[in-house]
Length: 285
Image (tube, rainbow, N blue to C red; front, side, top):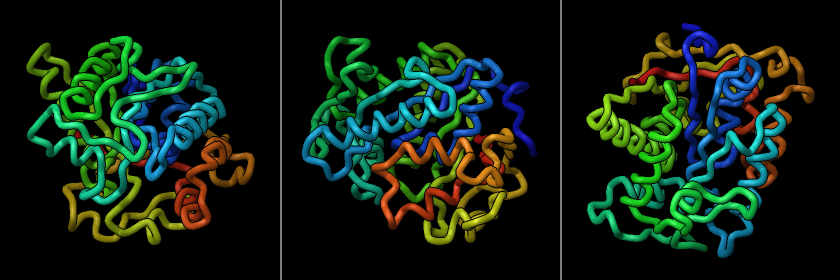
């Protein structure tokens, strides 16, 4: 089934955990919104600073996201930094999975470089913007930040990562988004549409997305290991300037190139496999 941004969306929010996820999953969504004057916000939850003992990696990756979005025609006013930690991919290491499962909502989960939110000098994080101070790396602060952000922006359509994603931050983010939407629904009846995209599938990053194809194939094991049905996916056909045949002139490719930190040799083929003629999602709410 085709996804028509112009028809279905009046105010879009893309919520992703890490720098480059917004390009891999939803560069086409962002571009189509930009082209058709559909209001949108790209929300970056973590600073992507895994393994770094200072802020240098986080600063670099946030700037790379801004550069990638600028390539798509966006600007920093459409970008919100939440400024939380990136502590690893497996669920046992994942910051967002730890936070979601934590019973003590005040317990701080430090990263290798911080215990509280941070942003850029010329683009502060959401908590700083609202409260004039950094926010603790704990469950209650993150949940309240996300709740306030959704209340403020009131998107009618949300694109975010999937509960079936193999990265703990991706699945953890999904659960937080659903939790906060349930809170807001009880509070004021707010009920946006929610679409989820896969980045790290159960087939493994070495196998999916399939390399050198113009369309996505069904990840091996997807239907056996999730509630997703391949035939129920929503397909966004990308604009001509983002089609795979454009090669190095492809706008999604050019935006992804801005993410120099992520483009390590062992990840390059995986990341470039998202350069296709389409983006795919499942509607979950």
